[in-house]
Image (cartoon, rainbow, N blue to C red; front, side, top):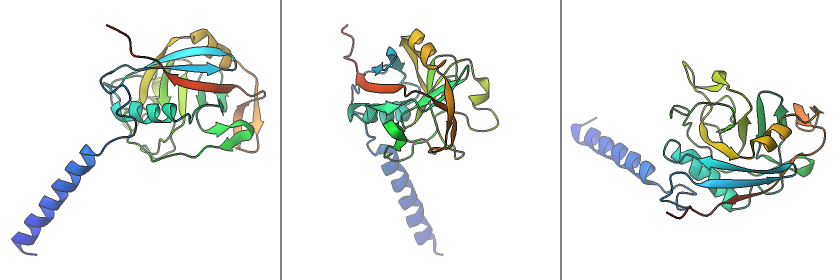
Length: 203
């Protein structure tokens, strides 16, 4: 291959990389100058407020906000509750109908945020970059979910109001649900009635 052809390929690769990095992310214009947007969850067991950390997890926060403003989390289930470990939601409507998911996002688990009690992180499959819309709350300090020699689970915010509500959700009785093959599904539905981006604080 000639030097000219190699130079052209290198230029193309650089241009492609720059285009990918400057591609607009869904949700990036939602309170775009606010590094710490807040989202209110109204649940069937009470309300809670989450403060997101866009400074440390911009891709994850923008993705999450996009689902929130589109109403994608409204009337969904907390479908997995492991007492003293996690509360997971965002992926199923009542009767365990799976919600449509968008594109996968990069794993931002190396952002310095830890899977500490009451933090919120992205659920994923074995592929570290497979997170889409499902999230979970840490119900204790889960050091095993932080990155080390392998990828961790990306934390992108924390509950600042309503931890007592989250505690109640974390203690509900669970059972095996054959429909989704989950061992830790609540016996009685725990519903995320609505998720709302709160107004920016006025300085």
